[in-house]
Image (cartoon, rainbow, N blue to C red; front, side, top):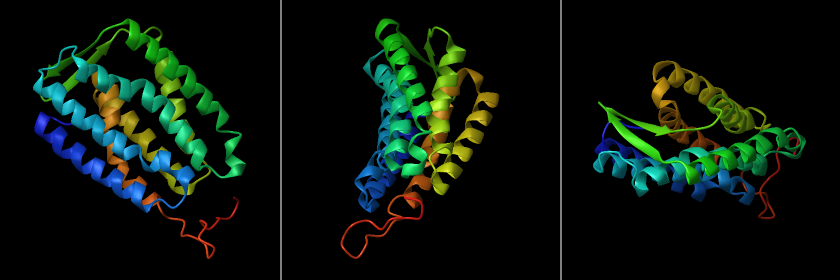
Length: 215
């Protein structure tokens, strides 16, 4: 999350452009969900620029922002990690995938039955949603997103997981009321890491992607 509508729009456009580059660089179909993640995060920030211009509230842009930040990311990241993982890592990814599915379902139900409100707080936006068992949901969310990266079996994705975990901890400590929002902003910064990760496996001599050790 940025500090104004203009900042969100500019950052979102830049992140979406990185996402497009990630997709174009990707040689393996099963890497596409993670490679496309910056596209989703860029759209997410562009949507937030609309929330800024609407002075917060409970409008469609606020709901769309919350849907991406909460149930969509909780499921997208672990499924993307599962798709990209080498065979040896797929069994252990069942835990974060299951956590993501359960957390995503609970968050989707909460969004369908409770209003979500965006509030402008100086140079930041806060999002308010009355969640049941918020501690359990945050734990499930982090297990699904950060946990799947750490267990992915891919060196770059593991380091990305460490980076995101550290960023999430800092965001939680500094901006507790805006934790989810600042978390998503930090995840967007990590799009640069995904740009380096995408397309790292050159195509083999037969036109098929070359396999790495352990795959």
